[in-house]
Image 1 (tube, one colour):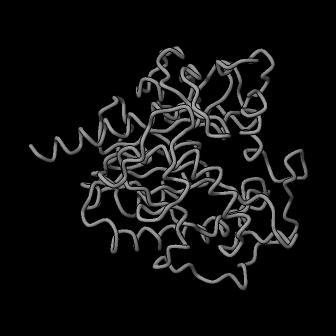
Image 2 (spheres, rainbow, N blue to C red):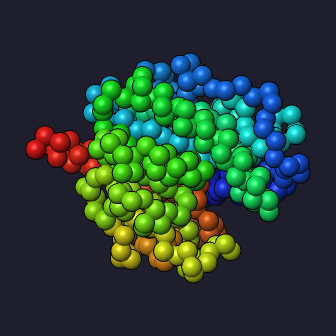
Length: 346
């Protein structure tokens, strides 16, 4: 079990040659050619769709959760994090190809299974495949390379969302959910489609996880400070208690930290007894997995409460941001949807 949780961190490390086998990109940014535009009319360009059997339909082992998409009253548009850390041909283009079947499988068996599935209890799950930026985009000293790679990726997310609105949504309440690179794209999407826009009336909540989001990021969408608040956003980044990552700077410690055990933004400690359960890499359910406390823009946890926890030395729990609090997130989605629909009926 210790190794299971340690392995969650591997994809969160940088793509230099390391224990995770990731790689540096040594050439300047260039648009991937050939790399055909995604056609979102094809089910193959979606990692998750309600009417297609996929990893987002599953529920954890050793749990009594059920996939409720058939009766769900809301949709979630989920933007997955970076899974592109290598290249099948060794040349490491800046953006992934949707024809990379190995990458698609890795995405499905990691983030779609462990993260997107949290929403299947109360939402129809939509998760587009997109030509994500390579992880090195977050490490390169050349900001132009980073911007171009992320812009290229966001264009796909935007196109997929427009297709979703035109062909799938039909006026239903919308949850936006994302992690890491996905959160960068989700913030842009929120500003373009929801913030001070008519579509904002359909927004239940946005889960913007794994990247710093400032309290004033949006003009009309505030941070959420209560479990049943709607038309708001929540955000957190998980690290070991008393740990500050190397990049941490005091001038950006104003980032929103939502405690996923209380759904408040204060610095109150919440014990693992309030944790309804999380999931390990093998998608096994573990109750009371972690405690949580917000501290200067970071979410701090003690070592997960599992057998052998004394041997855990991880400091960065980025890749387990959702895993550690899986059942609490699942419950909160339902709570906010219920509150949203109740207000709509008034």
